Image (tube, rainbow, N blue to C red; front, side, top):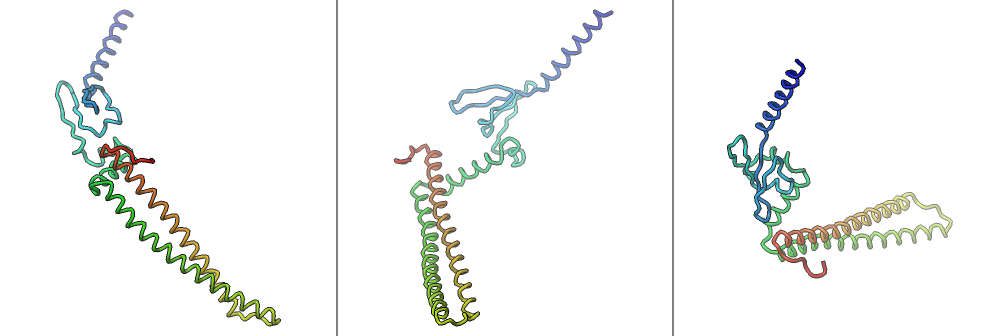
Length: 201
């Protein structure tokens, strides 16, 4: 009786394994060297390539370029999706890396114009503050009380200086960010196009 029970358990386990294998899907994909691979899981680096699913003896085409965004998003992380979109934008926007330089220069000109404007405004505000401080010093030297209007002017002058200085700092940071962004875009564009890195990089 015990022997029959063990045989029954073995048969049940075998049937379960066969059932699982029958439901398993086998994928077929081609790597960058043109070599065909088979497996139950597609490696992440090949997840965005066309693949085929071998299911119960039938061959199903799986064209990832036609997958719905929601389905494909389950296979790729948000960072990978954003990176792919950025790569596509670079290829579709620029026909050469020289065009990236031109776009960078246009953006830099706008930021540099703001820097020049804030620098001029900041100098003017500082000159105005110095003039107000000299007036206050003359009043103090004469042992007179400083008018409230002058105190208000001094406070407003300092506020303008603080604002223009903050705007100038922000613009300088933006200038560096623009340079870094376009440098990264240019390097990535050359990589996507199969071009060697620029000298000095």
